[in-house]
Amino acid sequence: MARKQGSHSEITGPRVHSAALRLFAQHGFAAVSMRQIASDVGVQAGALYNYTPDKQSLLFDLMKGHMDELLAAHSQADISGDPLQRLEAFTRFHIDFHLERPDHVFISYMELRNLTTENFTVIEELRRTYENALETILRDGAARRVFVLNDTKITALALIAMLTGVTSWYRATGRLTQNEVADLYWELVKNTVGA
Amino acid sequence: MARKQGSHSEITGPRVHSAALRLFAQHGFAAVSMRQIASDVGVQAGALYNYTPDKQSLLFDLMKGHMDELLAAHSQADISGDPLQRLEAFTRFHIDFHLERPDHVFISYMELRNLTTENFTVIEELRRTYENALETILRDGAARRVFVLNDTKITALALIAMLTGVTSWYRATGRLTQNEVADLYWELVKNTVGA
DNA sequence: CATTGCACTGAACGCCCGTTCAGTTAATTT
DNA sequence: AAATTAACTGAACGGGCGTTCAGTGCAATG
Image (tube, rainbow over all chains, first blue to last red; front, side, top):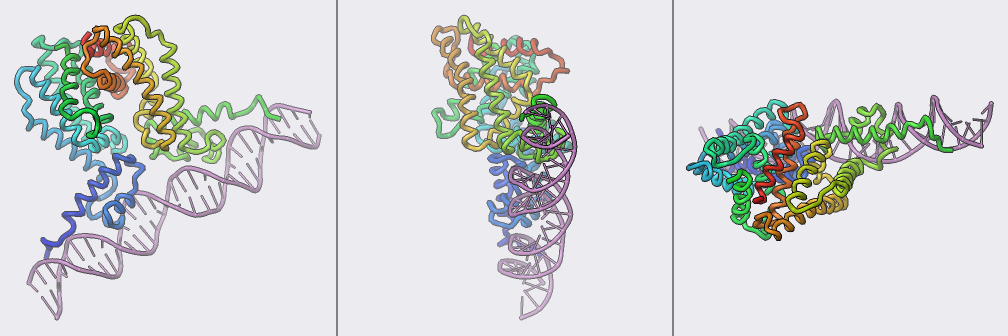
């Protein structure tokens, strides 16, 4: 019969994924071996295969999990009101969410090319869904002449690149708090859309 | 005596580096083997070592060469006048330069963690030099109240992230010409700095 | 025409890779 | 106490890795 207590799998499973997360973010997917992940968890390489069918799935699960969390958190977030208010809410949501998951963000932007084509397609679609949420806000604002935009699609991409870039320099121990960063970026975003 | 004509080294050498450039950009440094590069050039793996001391140097040379070219082109470019004119010139220079070297740009932003610490330090310093050029323009403009900025350092980083992001979606066969992209981004940048 | 030396081959070096699996351990259930 | 089974070990599989180097062929030199 299946054991309920004393089982290690509920501990080891998450540890495998969080070791993979950290190591992939630090050294890159291709540069990290299953033996390194195993050693970090404190088991032999073979034991990893109780928790993932293969290395590729380890990467995909991390990225898919991140995108699912992003979209779930985004629909939970209170992003409402007129376009300007929604853009502010989106900006602050994006900064907060991304600053709290630097490793996930890093992997999701750097390791796309190490996904199989099927897995890549899945992630790309989720990413496009998120980008479209921003584009909708921009289009609404442009229609109501609250924003002045020459090209909503390019503006959306430019804003996301700007906002996500924050993870490449932000350090919790640095000069600015997370809220100060969000304030600064909101000013930049507001200006960018001509509001 | 050394042969001057009929020598292949002047042909093979550049081919090694350009094969490495393309393959590293496509699959990532860690995922590309010396044998793949050799096969792309049309030689055996051992022959590569006539042109590079090791794989790491291949990566470093590509990144160092890119940064040197960037800084050289930047100082050749006519970036003069008042802060607004200089910011426009910088923006257009940055977009043009980066759109014409997508592989170099990709490698220089993605493969930093695969550099040895010594090599990383070198590249980082060159990158900071370039960022400082933008920051100087911003500080001048803020001092003369042409720009409205809360934090010149963060604004510089945000703008560079936004501008460099163009390489991740731009395709020469797409909807927009390089000049149209530069025009769009200049509008965004101008707005962002409150000018 | 003999010599030089560049450019390259092809084999080898020791090592690490992702993945599989028979066997061991020990906690739980009956 | 016996049976069951989850969790894991340790060895092995075939293969690829970066790098080295003695040897080969040939174009240019003297």
